[in-house]
Image (tube, rainbow, N blue to C red; front, side, top):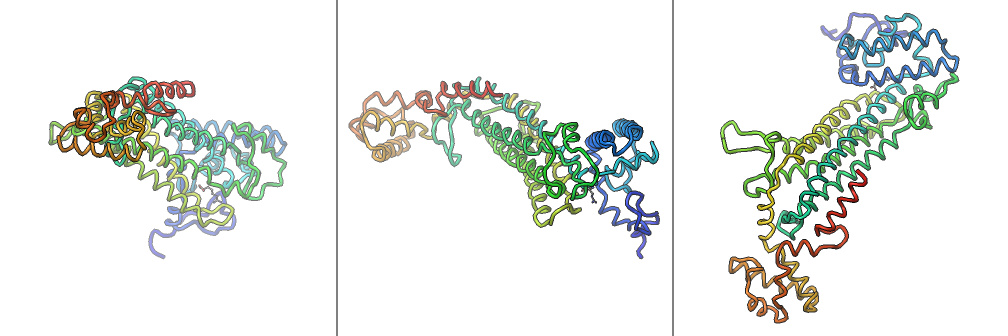
Length: 467
Ligand code: ARG
């Protein structure tokens, strides 16, 4: 046997009954999850306290043992919190690290804690509690971002900017309207978060290894103690299910995609060529060589975090896709993906909230850009339909001619002479000039959900009453 591949120690204290020797060093390394699942310590201890309380209530363990167990668990909780706990890789994971320490602290009573449960339902519980709490944090972070956008939308309900399709100037819109588009997106993300919390609000503990348990446990009691609506209904599904983690990652990926689109817009808007916004010093960096530069690093990193988060979703989907029911050790690979995605998402949401709140909106530049690129061409076509009775297709054609003429003269539509426009279509009167300005254009779009300032204000009020 090659050096370092066999551990000289004895077999595992938790499950070593039928093992003569310990694992190969490399086995220990691939098997251990303590390096990352120690993050679940608070959930693990909370779950064990609820379980021990229920066991005693049901007469499965004595009250005396229950008290020892709970005291010991609370000691361990402080030890970990205060950095005094020594995690051991030999003990694989957080569950066995806590249990082994409990045995040292309270003796044989510790061995009774694992009655009527398994690490399979234990890990399902701990991780679900963690994901549920994380979703609650994401919900709060999304509310803060939405609120930052509502403030900016209110300030800029009248600020005209070019609206784009294909990143080509399309029609004038207001910056407030554009902000509210993101409010809708992040509002849907938040609704997905709330729905997922509701979905995963079922307690796994008591499913045991996969088949349930012969002990007279009360799963409703533990569910209630741990803040779940009810216990899960099928013990096999309970220990096999990682939908809750996949759901978290899917939501994170969609939300990160929204953040990334916004980040991309911030990068574009803050270029000198666009100049629509100026990022605050707090959310940009300088260049070590080019003194004039102000780089949108935070936006770029938010955009990049999306790659990591999407990667985590695909990684866990791939881990889960071929697994037979019920638990397989493959599922231990769920945690790092979720932890990494959670950290990235929290950071991205916070950075974006900061950028949105702090950035300076350059209304003059936006307005100037809004008027270029013949952005009111559709208004001219609509005027021809409304005022001159032309079919829309003919109006579109006539407007195209007007745009070509303005282009050849190097001027805006509003700068064309009335005679020139009448040469294209004699029905055109001077009234047409009322709709060719960008302000008139946005003010006219009063349809529900449209860009008119009054309509945008109505949508802001709707969201204000729900945020
Ligand atoms: N560390 C394991 C995990 O994260 C805990 C469950 C282990 N269960 C087992 N039967 N080996 O998945």
